[in-house]
Length: 123
Image 1 (cartoon, rainbow, N blue to C red):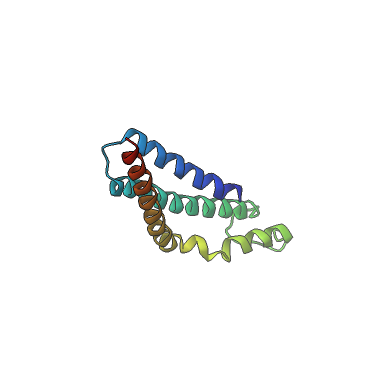
Image 2 (cartoon, helix red, strand yellow):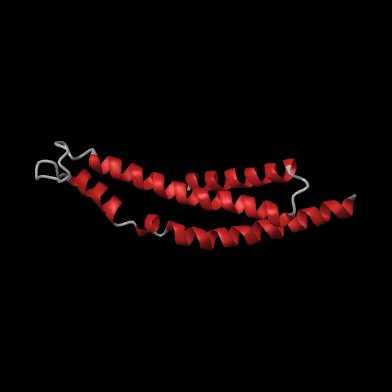
């Protein structure tokens, strides 16, 4: 849960900084840049997670032959093997990332439109 909150807080902060420093950008342009970073972040997190899990699994291969002999197998190794082999979410991250990025784009564009309209009417 902490990772998800950190992920979203980072993207919200990035979007706020983008709005602050690129005031001449349109709402659509800001939303596109923020969404591109959002999508790239999803893909990078999936690759890093896959690499981390595979590295942990490879640490159980004591003789580095690419196979697990009976003396290398233990409950922790089986747990690591299951974590590597049974998570389709990492493999489908490019596709689910597109769906979430579209939703993120819509959300950012609507919020920017509301805030910028309210700021313009107050002036």
